[in-house]
Image 1 (cartoon, rainbow, N blue to C red):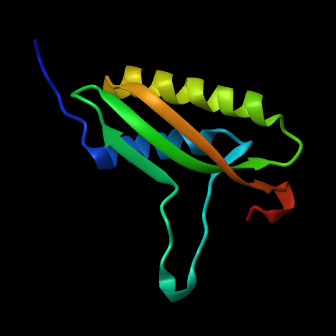
Image 2: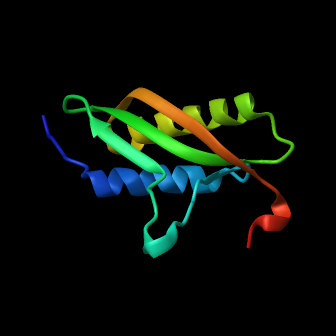
Length: 105
């Protein structure tokens, strides 16, 4: 059996790209003074092929938050399993803000 390893950086990129594909969700971005910014994405490994993931997001105004997060959860699970061979053991999606289409550059 062949074994491959997908490093944390690649998993983060895969997660970011999955979030970016959904027009109703953005990764939360909050800049602090002194050029420090917190990361909206946290990953912890549980064994060889499962992850604990926590993501801070903003949701587009007027969208049903529950349905939007369910759609993202499904996309993340499918992409991580199909493309990287890892399962999500725990997924925490934290809505930190709501955005309006006019606010996005």
